[in-house]
Image 1 (tube, rainbow, N blue to C red):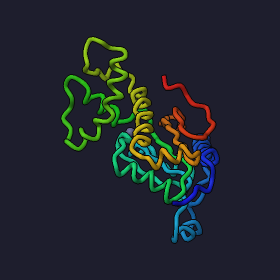
Image 2: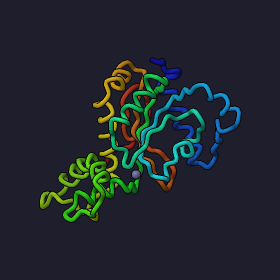
Image 3: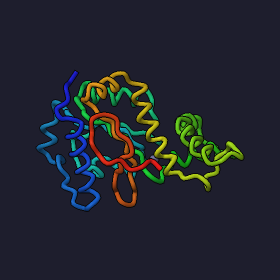
Image 4: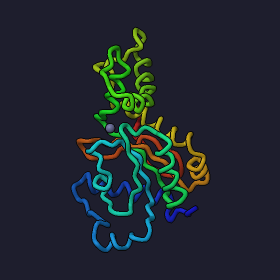
Length: 224
Ligand SMILES: [Zn+2]
């Protein structure tokens, strides 16, 4: 066990400040030099763990303006929780002392679009592994679709707000991490860890927080 070095609030404030610099075009590119590289050879002590979509436009150290040793990262298409993801986040919290987990969704997510398609009347052919990976996103599609449509269970991509589906899936991802990890839940319960769910806006470059569990004060955007 490694105790966190900062509070969840301090971790969030530093993380959010990095995104703010990126948004405003004033990135400082910290911790990317030879000295930092040498300093980290023997150990790492990231205060933030990030689990996000694999999308190439979500390059984490760039959009949060940080560098080597700052973020412990796991990503997959559509940020779908799996045992390896839970284990990675647990490791960051219990062994590396991370005080914050950020779950990073984004607008125009291809995985969400594909999950909507798979929930439709005539799904496009996909490989077994892709279909299985997208399956945990489908409850979010259904939840939004069935809230507004009673005529058919098959979602119509032209009549559903994909970014709203993404936000439902984002909060479900945060819940899934808590549900699959006693270690993460215990750390939140002890007040040493927070989980913030953000949806990144591709145009603006801003990671907008939509959900928080744990001791962080921040302004949440309405889920809609
Ligand atoms: Zn995505």
